[in-house]
Length: 214
Image 1 (cartoon, rainbow, N blue to C red):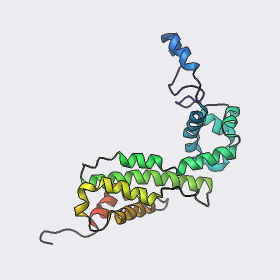
Image 2 (image 1 turned 180 degrees about the horizontal axis):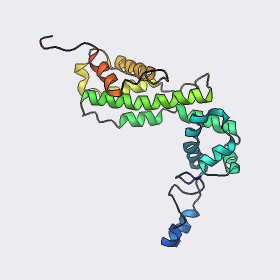
Image 3 (image 1 turned 90 degrees about the vertical axis):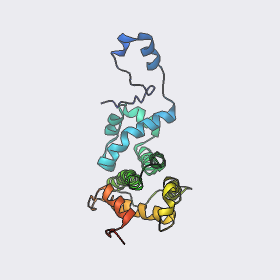
Image 4 (image 1 turned 30 degrees about the vertical axis):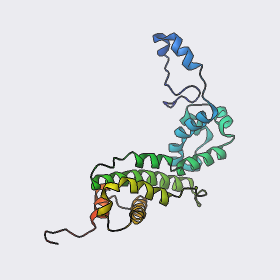
């Protein structure tokens, strides 16, 4: 089974029927190979979900099938199965997609909506990481990156909450740390699913009912 992203040719999805629609374009696209780094990235995109599901017990054949390529192509790109798994682990812990998703949240929306979106994004990231850690039996986190998650998250939240800074009772760095702790703890397999909106409401207003005159 081939993935939608071609691993041997350019990222455009080319089907056999395209040859009858535009033969010249079909030939050009089929002849355009991926650069090695792009091929590796495409393979990782395809195999990370399988590793997260099946862990290290997955065979190299299953990995190749998930990527829609031959085992030989897999080994040419990564050398061996363990090297592929190591690259997949690095991809799983890469926070870049997390930063991009958080920075795409509209700072001009209401505070509750922003915090709900922050929780949704963090939950997706942490759940993906936790499931991979469990499936792959990881005991140690890869070496920390130069920009620690806490500092980068605080900087992003400072920009996101800029319109609401005068409403905060604590520094934004404290908010960032608390949001991170709540998001991570509620992403663990045994945690109840309270919902992003409920958790963001508790973060914003606590557990006390705000009555008139108080």
